[in-house]
Amino acid sequence: MSSEVSEVSKVRSFARRIFIAEAIDDPECDEEKLSRTYAHLAIINKILSRMGGLLRRYVLEDAARVGGPATVLEIGCGGGDMLASLARASARARVDLRLVGLDRDPRAVARARQTLAPYPNAQVHQGSIDDLAMLSEQPDYVFCNHVLHHIPPEDLAPFLRKLRLAARRRLLVNDLERSAVAYGLYTLLAGVAFHKSFVFADGRLSIRKGFRVPELEATCVQAGFPPGFRVERIAPWRVVITAVGG
Image (cartoon, rainbow, N blue to C red):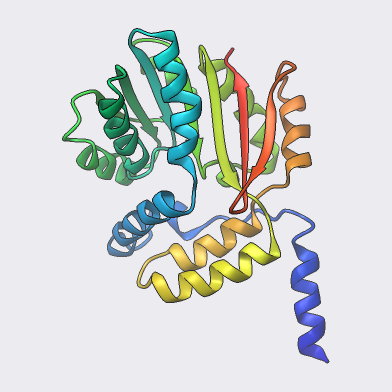
C-alpha cells in the first residue's frame, strides 16, 4: 500500500513545476563526468530534442527566403553541437549564416570552441543574455535549447523578454514538457544508454523542472510578447515558443 501511495504522489507532483539546481550547473562538478555529459547531450539533442528540424523550419528556411547573410545567436550553447549541426545544414543549403554561441560556463565555452573549430562562420563567447553588447551586431535569429528550465521561476519572464528583444527577426525556444510518462520512459532509456555522466540524474530532474503549454503562454504574456507568438507541444514531450523579434 505504501508503495502505491508513493507512486501516486510522484504522478501528482508533476502537476506543479519544481526548481532545483542540477549537477551540471555546479562549477565544481567532476570535469570528466561533465565531458561525458556534453557528449551524451549531443546524442540526445540529435535523437530526441527535435531542434534540428525546428532550426531548419524557423531559421534556415526563413533566412533563405529573406536572402543575404544572417546572424544566428544561441543562448546557452553548451558544447556547441546544435550550432555545428546548423553550420552543416546551412552549408548544404547554401544559406549564408554567421553563427554565434553564448554560454556563461567557461567549461562549456571551451568545449563549444573545440566543437566549432572546423566552421569558420562560427564563434563562441563567454557571457549571459545580459552581455549582448559584446556582439558586433544584433542577431537576426535567437534560439535556445533546453535552457529555459535552468532559469529560476522569478527570472523566467525577464529572461524571455530579453531573448525576444535580442532577436531582430525571430525567437525560437525549445524545452521540456513536464510529464510523468516522459519521466518514466526517460528513466528506462537513460538508465540503459548513458553511464558515468550527469545525464541520467540531471535529465530526470530536468523533466520535473519542465513546463506545460499554458504556463509558458502566461509567462510570455507577462514578458510582454506581442500578439502572434506561439507556444506549442510537439513530440516527444517538447514545448516550443516562437515569436517575432523585438
